[in-house]
Image 1 (tube, helix red, strand yellow):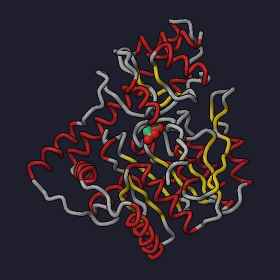
Image 2: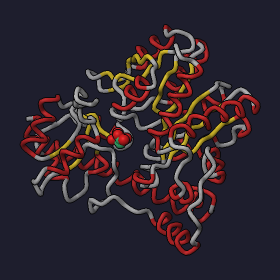
Image 3: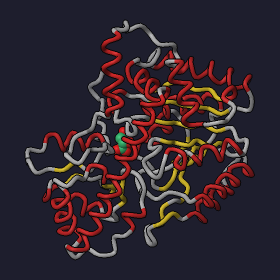
Image 4: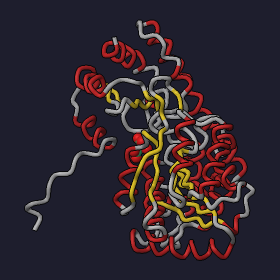
Length: 392
Ligand code: LMR
């Protein structure tokens, strides 16, 4: 029955990790997948997470099922963190399997409620965005975003495209730390996007996988609040993979800001059906950790400081990369410090990225995306000399 099943291509991001793991070269560096590593090249366990882990182990709670929509304390904490002072009664939240799981539930819900809507994603966008919405059966198109020549966001073209989009189209926006480019919208740009979305009757979906990795929790979350304050029905997908360094726990959420509490109740009932028929209900551990940290004032303060530590270390590595490349003769790389978050769109071509991988054991995506959050003092010089060799 499966004799004719064709071999699917490797995933452009996680497939590269498979290739990296199989690479026998000891000096290899993985700047492919978006995973933060500390100054010693390790994925950190945050101290706030360690504390809660110990408490949970000592508490010895049984492993019962969570409600379909997740741990109630977690959902409430997510509402507070992501939506701030907005009216929580009109927001439907479900705990999800990371940011990807939130996007998948959102995509299935959109397919059910607005099956003919086109989903507009940025050009370029995270590779999985197109795949998730297309596989849910929705038509995916792009809006202009990255201006390669000037290394910036082409906001005028973006706005023009949004203003010409069919009413009811879904617009997927990166709330902060645009993946893959690292170039974010300014506050003025965001206002123009909100106005265009409102005037054209579009449906905004903000993907926020990196809240706190650009400037601060509040500043990075400002785009979400702009849409909510404008009274727009808005979907938000969020993730604690990066910000809590809880990648494998698969902990995220989908929030849908509705017109009123009654609508939110009806939307939540539909989201629960999607969850129930996909994975029944979510896992307990990650949600318990995040809820405990976010609701305990001391742990929350500790988390914010650990998050700031990760953010600052990435910025230091960006500066060190620019300086090191300049010293190696690769000048004009200041854009690296203008980008936000884990990623840098290096501007290297696919051929150069392949050479970087094959000849220098430095792994980045074919698009030219490098995960600067995985650079550390131990691999910085290798990364610099490898880039200098392929760029020179
Ligand atoms: C990335 O873009 O590398 C991360 O978001 C990890 C992933 O799931 O692709």
